[in-house]
Amino acid sequence: MKRFWTATLAAAGCALAIGMTWQVVAQQPAFPTKPIRLIFGFAPGGSGDLAARLLADVATRTLGQHVVVENRTGANGMIAAEAIARSAPDGYSMLYCTTGNMTIITELPGTKLAVNPATELMGVSQMLRSTFGLVVGKDSPWKTTKDILDAARAKPGTVSYASPGVGSVQHLSGELLSQKTGVKMVHVPYRGSQAAIQDLASGQTGFSITNLGDTIPHIRQGTLRLIALGDPLGRQFFPDAPMIGDVVPGFETYAWFGLCGPVGLPPAVIKRWEEAMKATVDDPTVSKKLLDNGMVPAFADSAALNKTMEENRRGYREVIRAAGIKAE
Image 1 (cartoon, one colour):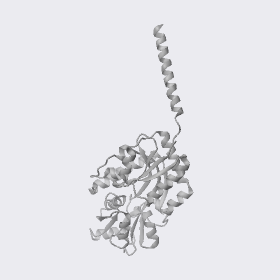
Image 2 (cartoon, rainbow, N blue to C red; image 1 turned 180 degrees about the vertical axis):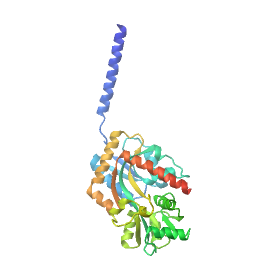
Image 3 (cartoon, rainbow, N blue to C red; image 1 turned 90 degrees about the vertical axis):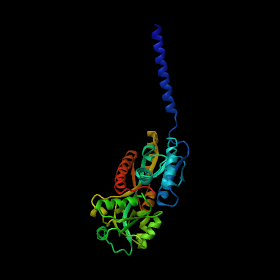
Image 4 (cartoon, rainbow, N blue to C red; image 1 turned 90 degrees about the horizontal axis):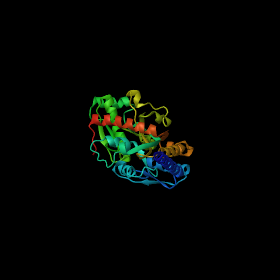
């Protein structure tokens, strides 16, 4: 009898504890209940910063809490990434992330990382694609992708391509073109996109495979010419442009921007952020502003973005290793 009452009381205690646990969970307020930080790892004023602020505006309305963009620059976006990786996984501190600081930097030998984005951060949702195109200066003799490749084959080491720095998507796009065609071309790195574009426009470098957001104004002004697109989504801007892939089968390149957070975010928080991102991308005013600045609205949920990041890391790893590229 004593054993019976002991077992009964123990079972009752367990039931009470479980009931209290469920009560506590049920009483937890739904996310969010306070203001949110959205950290972007680059300076204000660029296309990525514009997109982050558009997201913050719509998310403030969708989530019912103020979302504040904080620019925390340095180390190619890794200062911001470190801040988020070390924050609580509760959804109140999030990273407006990019292809570079989530995928390329993890594969670049010689990079000293305070945190590893591949293991300490996760994708929450994608907002847009930054489409890429092959551009040349207005006075360039080249009219097609084939013209460039033929010139590089005829005089090895004389055809150069510009990028905003070693390990950038632009650098790896040029190297990918070289590897897929077996044609050696000279990489000329700059400190930022604008310096690279200026020298390209003046004929100091041969070509660049770079994002249309930076080059569309120059193309429209006639200081640069678009030769071909690296991403099919670029046809939203130039519907009649050929693809680099028409000449180099399998070639495709682009960058993406989205939302990332620390590993361990609760599923309910991820879902709320996915809803906020979807509302942003579906907003007609936001879509128009993105397109006006050479960016294509392209929502993807957390699972899809994390899959994209895995594919990006694998692809960039192959290009980097084949070329022996190292961080400077």
